[in-house]
Length: 579
Image 1 (tube, rainbow, N blue to C red):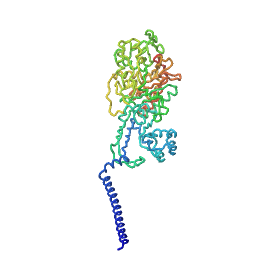
Image 2: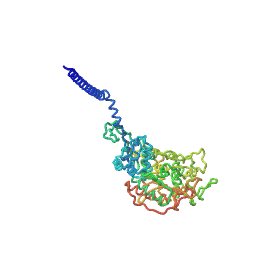
Image 3: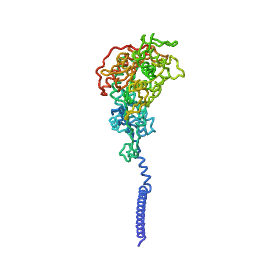
């Protein structure tokens, strides 16, 4: 074999070896890659399985809060006064959003936002993951927002509080804030009872944060408890209507009306003027938030004379047929003078109430002494909380000096030198109406007969009711007669207190009474602040409201009419503590 042939054979062998080496290297590399991949698969599926599952869950599974449904507030017949309805809240994750996104113009238009301000907020909060865009909107509007398909914009369900009766029940029911926490009224007083317990659930979300499906329920939401009030919405509406009408007609500064069930102590109606609409607080005036029937104090004036008379009858010193000489129509105590409207001369106890004689009742008080009258006032609930648990209730002032001055005894007997709220005054008349029992007052519906405390005898309360009947039939309260029903009550006209003491030309017109007088079902107190129409006596301004409200209320309660009721003209009240 030549050298040339040997070299060719060597080259062929070398080439074959190189080819086999390359093939082996490629195969080895391939097997190595397969091995590495295989190991990685084992590592991922076996060794690091739990870790990777957790990482996936972190990116796709979230724990969300389930909002609890707040309890419904109802009237005594089950009519809703406050309900929570499902709504949507639109929010954004600025870290996922482009402030220059063109569709933000449509978003701002739908949500009634300023477009420039919205874009600026997104830039300012670019590092944040959550901001509210618009809370508690209609679900249909939220769907339009989500249909824009803007990255970083989301929605979630919440609840919004709605008040079907609006301003009619505003002062009793109150309202919640945007997070459904009670801020006023019953909503505040019973916030814990009405509030539910939020729940929690795990959900699967896509990369845009949208919920794909619910995975597990961690804790179900516990709804709040419903609450039935003592309020009768029918009576509340008519009371509100009549009070609003009289305040408007007399250009008064405001007014209050309270209605009680005499046999249970339940508040059937409680309204005030001015009021507000809890569904639209954009024009809310802070002074209209007060439930004046409980938070505002006033001197009750001549409406206290029947209570003072009850103390006289209870003492045994004054039989019902006693007469008092009120001549010459006034009494002087140093620089103070107590006056009647005119010189009435000799008056019976009944006529002292009928004609609203300051002189007559003050003479009785002087003989009885301040302690005896104050004791009955206290037993009837003055100077202490009513027990309804309403936020901001004012207790009032019931004086208890170590030694009574004669003028203090005299003025307290006709309701000056003390202060009460309208519900306290209604409570006292409830005692006179039901035969002498003081029942606990309640804004919550009473399911069981209440246990009361006797504070006056049936005989005394009957005698006082007969006097109150005469006030309506022939005295200062003839305009209080409620149609085909009998009634009894007492007028009051008191000077309002200003920054410099009593205002000479500003009065509060009051009427407190009950009907039907033979077997009273309801007690109502009407108070109108500073009427400006020229009429300002309780018998002129407040008594007609009592008549209209009681007439309609008794019909609604199916009380049989009394067809033998007739009427006569009205006598004006007294000067000073005017009737």
